[in-house]
Amino acid sequence: YPNAMKIIRDLGIEDRLQWKEHSMIFAKPGSKKREFTRFDFPVWAPAPLNAGIAILSNTDLLTWPEKIRLGIGLVPAYLFGQSYVESQEGVTVKEWMRERGIPDRVTDEVFIAMSKALNFIDPDTLSMQCVLIALNRFLQETDGSKIAFLDGSPTERLCEPLK
Image (cartoon, rainbow, N blue to C red; front, side, top):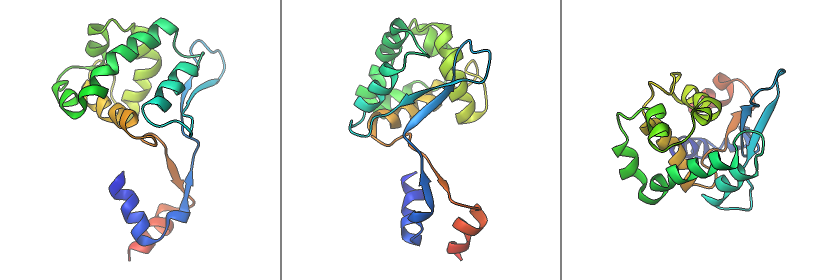
């Protein structure tokens, strides 16, 4: 992402990005209709505090015991960074969660969506290393999960300036 942003800055097309609110959106568990819930990352808080506030302030997705177990499970990723992330190669998301006593419901409600978004495969196949690379970015960088969209066709708004 930093390399892509450098290219966009070098091309002078930063104004073509439409930045979205810093949040993660999930389907609301047990909802009969299409309802969603959000993890809203406060702009005033630095990482990893903003991620903690986003997760803790959401009351629709995870219970307090689930939040605590997940948080404890993620502490080594925050403390040891890349070396910990690399050590998780070959451990699936589902195995990693179960080894830490994190209920399957957390995998089902949060990490299936994350696994599919990252690699289009299920958490019983995807290496936790892949997920931790993304999560570690959220824990280390205040805007690590913030996204923007181009204000038009990529062909016109991104590729044309490259010519």
